[in-house]
Structures are given as structure tokens and as C-alpha cells.
Image (cartoon, rainbow, N blue to C red; front, side):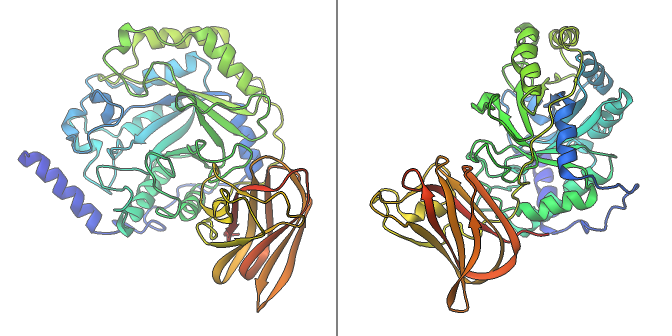
Length: 474
């Protein structure tokens, strides 16, 4: 290993071991006070934006893989002609309304002037804050600014089994920098959280803490976690906006979606630039407009198209030409339909996850434990002979709770009763008359050792994919 690489590894370790490099709540002063808008209004405004530019540009740009070597030296990040004005003009030509830049991808390289780690762009040959360049260019063209940030960070060893309080503080400090030093950020697209390939849970890096930090700095910044692979499409689990990555097989139900949504796709075959891009045809502008932008705008869904700058820091000519063609076919957002009301995001830790469960007689292959295993692909299935089925979870001790979420395999149950056990007896909590597949119940905080659901009316034996019990901040 070279002396230079050893130096960077030592500096990175030093930054992490120091714990908090700053007090995330007070290190940065807000330059402007913002009036907090209601979340449904922000969701509608996001959907109304219609179409934007995803910009995957980071250290993987200078490698042949979208997942970069976590020990790659900053020296390889060396654009000779970086021109974020060109990016913004290209977005404007397509009648896009915003951009979103990868501030830090999975290998942990920060392309802003961060004080949290030496593994950043200021220690590259460029020595220029790319986030600053980007936000200035896009605002100059009248475009809104969003940022992408990865929780998974292989350079700093922020991955399952190795996460420390210093890692969590680094996440908070980095997000504080991004939300404090670059003006209004309309949304954060967060990746690598609770994904099957990262396995970093919302408990390992506490989602609710980070979510509330973001809102405390910029109340109108939407938090968009790329987690559609695991969670049902009918509720906002750990996100303000439901996200669909088409390349990963996640496709929005254009006829059935009722939630504010985002769908993303690269104009090339990969997210980060590859040497084949300049000579390989990009996706058809006609198909992008007619199969993505226009139909999604009618389904409460914003479409974001990834356009990857090359190693010089410029968008290739073929992509620029395609964006201009899109702009001829698509004249900009014309107003999306009004969003239906939703239950709001579920952001707290599930207190019932993997807790001890009991139930009435159930199918041998679908025991009660499957309703609390943190997987929506398994289920508890009541035995067909049981006329009054029930299922309960034991939280261990009397615990503060204020929300219960019941997710069925298919919408089936229409009448049920929620109860809780405290002070050595059962108490009635709520009567449920919700026929939806996902049933969200919020209520004033109580203390409970157990929670039980009794099923009163159903077409078929109850099949429950997951039950969540929460104590959310209010």
C-alpha cells in the first residue's frame, strides 16, 4: 500500500474516532427562517414538478463499476472541464424543473467541502466544491435543487456489524452541512437504508432521529428513501415520497397508485458514466416522454431521468441532444391531479419486530411469528376452522405506544378490535372498520405490555403479513 493511501486511511480513521466533529444541532447557524408548509402541500408540489434530472457523478465516474473501490484515492477524481452550467442548461432544454446530485455514493467519497472526513473532493486534484457549483448553476436556470446521499458508506466502514455511534454522528454532521450551507434543498433522496444489499436497518442508523434532524434544519425538505423493494406500495413506510427504481424491477402501478411517488431510470444503461456512453445510443426520447413522463404525471408520480457527466465533468453530446429532443416533445408540467389524502409517513422503530407472539390456532407453515419478522413476504395465517381468530404481541414490559399498523396479505378483514394489556388486565383500544390492506391506527400515547387484534368480520381466514407497534414522536 502506498504512503499516500496510508495517509488518507489514517486521516479517515482519525475523523471517525474523534466522534462528533461538531455539534450537529448547533454547529451551523441557519441563514434564513422558513415557514413550515403542511406535508400534503409539499407532496403535491413535488408531484407537480413533473420531471427532473438525476446526476450520478462521483468517484465511480472514474472507475468501470458503479460500486467504486472504497479505497480509491481522491487523486482519480480529476475532471478537466467541469461545467455544471452545461448540466443545468441541458436540464432546462428538456423542460425539467429540478436536479438531484449524488453528494456521496456507497463508497463514501464526498463531493462537497466537508469537515467530517478527509475523503472528499477538496483533497482531489479538482479542489472545488462540486455541490456548490451544482446548486449555483441550477438555481441560475430557475431549477430547484435536490440532493442524493448514501447511508451505506464502505470507505468509512459504515455497514452491518460495524456501525458505531461515531458513524451515526458522521451521518448527522454530513447532512447538517448539506442542509445548512447550500440554501434551500427541496428534497433529499437517501439510498442504502434497509435495502437487501446493504442490510442497514432503520434501527442501526436511527431513521426517526435523522428524519427529525432534517426537518429541524429545513422543515420543507422532503425525505425520500429509496426503499420500495421491501415495503408495500399502499403506505409511506420510512419516506415522504414512495420511490420506484425501474432498473431494479420496481414499477409503479399507474392505474392503482394513490401516493406521492418518484420513478427513476438512467438515460444510458448504467447510473455512472462508462467509456461506452458516447458511442452507445441513449434511450428513446419519444419512449421516455410517452411511457414515463406523461403517464406518470397522471398517476401522482414524478419522473427523474439520470444523466451521467463524463470524466471531464461534462454531459456527452448524445445525451445533450436527447434532452433537447425531449424538450420538443414535452413542454413542461401542466398540473398533476390532486393527491388523495394519505396516512402520513411511518418513521419510527417497530417495537414489535421479532417480539414474542401468540395467537389462536394458525396454519402450521404460517405461525404467528411471521407477523412480526420484519418481512412483508411472509404471513400469519389463521386456521380456517377458527371462528374468532386473534393475534397478540408481547413487548416484554409496559411500553409507551401511540400507533399500530396492520398489513394484510390481501385486503380481507373489514371489522376488528384493538386491545392492549396493562396493569394485569386487557383494555379496549380502538374498534377498526378499515377494509384497506394496510390499516394505520394513530392514537394518544398509552402504556402497554401486549397488543392484541381480534378479527370480527372477514371474507377468508385472516392472513397478516406484518403488524407494527410504534411510539412515534409528535
